[in-house]
Image (cartoon, one colour):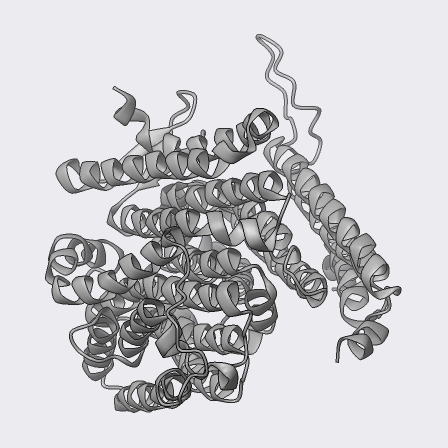
Length: 493
Length: 119
């Protein structure tokens, strides 16, 4: 059965397709967008099959070339990465539909190159999610990072080149830190398999505590840069605001989420919660950094006039929510943090798509020039309103679900100050989204004729906007069937 | 004391020193090509670290000969770093390609001059 090999196929499908895109493009350029969407849809089907297998028979361990796990490379899928894998590939699928028209306009004549790198990024992200081998994490991280640097650099303005260069330098330093952390762990345990590492680490820590502590520090700093946690976020606003629209939507909603997932994996599967709480106290530091990120990101977002740049700073603050959920170290907050990976992915993809749609139709990036867009682009504006309300956290949207769980988790941990932080951030969210509402709806337009984006761009936006509402109403299913057993595995007790 | 700390572990000291030289170049140099050279020194230092953790005192090359039991060095870090070298080469290639484009667009590769042109 082909579905027996689904764990490997989610990665291999986009990887092989990336190589075949130039061949197909050589014969017929117009086929490529459909081909890419089809490939990503297949990868999506395999992802669903993986999570189904996990829900029916428990965690999957897929071995490469018949080498048994501690020796060979293992793809390990449980509830956590099965879930993240589906979320990420679904958003990439939606973005790939949206990308067709957007890329035609922004990168004329370069569609082949764009879609090749796009698929490489997809393969890298999927590999990063399903792998159970620590060195593989580094390799896939670099595959997806290199693809991301290339995609950012093709932005319209020449400043995109400098944004990409800065991203490359910071990203390479962070990946080098992760590589060093892997080396330190290998030095004391002699293994690279995550499950095996988790077994051997307590003994290694008794023998050589300093090496294990250094490895943990390297991982924490390295992943904090990749996630874009507040003081290390500097690459993010430039890269997200200057990249082409489809790339912004994809990077902002998937890459940082995948990095956050790997961070959770390293902290909870390899180092174990006990080590973090009682030995290094990393959770306190992370929780406070996350709180600072939430507030500072929102405040900086208020200061922006460029729509895409505002969304990028809002990402800085939303990353804070995910890290806060992870750092509070109890099951409820963990649920909130992980479900926010999905919620924020959907919301940020929709918002960047709206930004891209407005640029596609009018070329306007400055919020103060949005006057009358509520009249000329009614569906896009309506979708934006729904998603922005979800970002603020109005029930019954998805944004409310994650904020509710995070607040409950903060109360459970006895840290009331973080409840205050979440409240304050919601207020700040209202401030920076209100400016956009105001300009969109409360000014008289000059033309006033309806002039919407093409259907292939509008439909993805509407689907995602509908999902922010639907998943908020139907949140109980993923919470009960996927989140509950997942949290039980990574944070027992 | 000094022998234990420095002489016995000189390979690690070399790696740390090289890494800091590379890090300094990445942070302090204004010229983009020099920054990329710094990145390369940085990652080469990490390769040296990996290669030295694979060493076993008195070990030979890791070739299996049937029926013989010899002490051999650990080949896995070396193989890992082959992958690392490939990654480093690709990143350098992307960075240099970017620098060429930056030079075409801005006419300079000095970071402070580019920042002036941007605003």
